[in-house]
Image 1 (cartoon, rainbow, N blue to C red):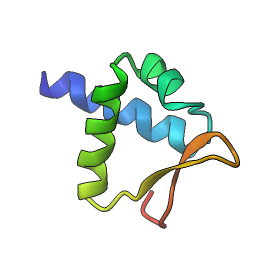
Image 2: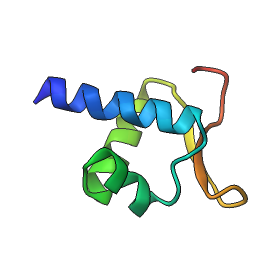
Image 3: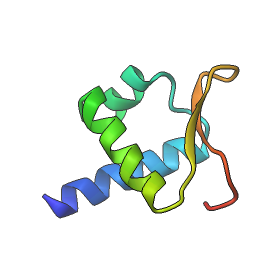
Length: 68
């Protein structure tokens, strides 16, 4: 389970870096989780100061700070 979560977090990380996430629904599909689980993962990463936020303007999730 931990390895699976780490793999999903790594996919999320790379999709955010490439600014190719799309909406939450699309991103959840891309990494193989439910939308609820996606937000739980993002919350966990934000608790570690990753600063992930959704940009309405660009319709992608982005890092809102310099921690990449």
